[in-house]
Image (cartoon, rainbow, N blue to C red; front, side, top):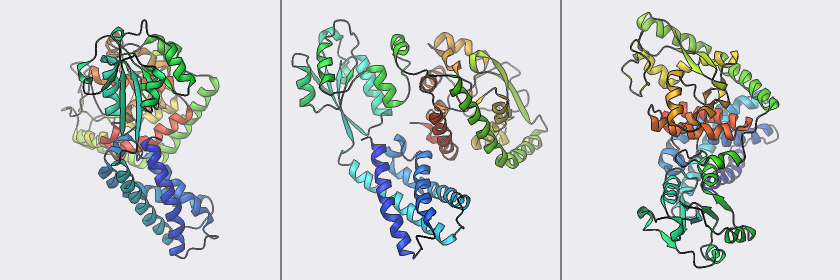
Length: 447
């Protein structure tokens, strides 16, 4: 069980005990509040997930997670109260307040308990890694910084035919291949075998097949990382693996559902946000009496160009000298534009691009054609991100911090390719929900 699932289970159990107890202590009539019995805990757990409480960064820093709990519970309480009204139950301030106090205490208790259990190293996975070279070191580094599990217990198997041992792995347990692989897997209580040698020619596959037949999962380097960190490693990308692995499932019905989701989602967001958008438009105009909107050519599905619509956040004629990468602290950004960028209000007009069909709610970030040719020349499979429409938000946007360099583009591409390869409507819904976390806590985009 991953730490995320473990924390969710603890949340579920504590809420399942604490909520009925709170209703009993408060003297609430369960028959009259039957809808609330289900809606309040369900919406609370949903909001805890949507706002990133089960992500690696929240699990790694419980203190920071505890600071976010009150905000998440307030949002969940408001959403649950609205849901109960929609479902036909009269709003009760005392019931809502009881839920607010109960689930705040439950979430805090769950995280304190989880931290206590984590100190006893209960959440670790045991990997048997074939190879101890540079590829194996890359695997270790990625797992330590981005893996789903809090701790990994690693055993390496290496032989001279796999290449040289990476000196950065010298402090780890490295065994030879003289012993039976199945016996080694049993002795190390292996959860999964990962094949990651630098040189695979001549590697005996019979022993790996024996282990798999005995019930041990066996994964190739790229497939394991894709599953474990939810991105595709561009640095050691194997095109043959990309070609033959599962994914890239698209069809007319899938496209229809995505388009309906885009239209419905855009209208749901645009209508309530319209007053704030009008206020932002007025602020932009009053700032320097310049144009309110900023239109710029971007690239979307199949390389088609379109004009993206945003609120202007830079001074007039900011690119009179030509197109340049935007920076996190760009001197061309106006004071009003700085606020609009932090609040994401400058992005709201792009909902019109979504309604027009140029963009989707979820997809790779639309890039400028001036930069695409250079990026495609330096990054493999860069054009494959255009297999789907560009998006207002996306898997890369919620998982990687702001950046404007080649290394940043490579990292973002690893998330974009994962999205294109594993697209589903549920994946889109998940990304939209987690976008709210990035809006509330801008620095939480890092996994």
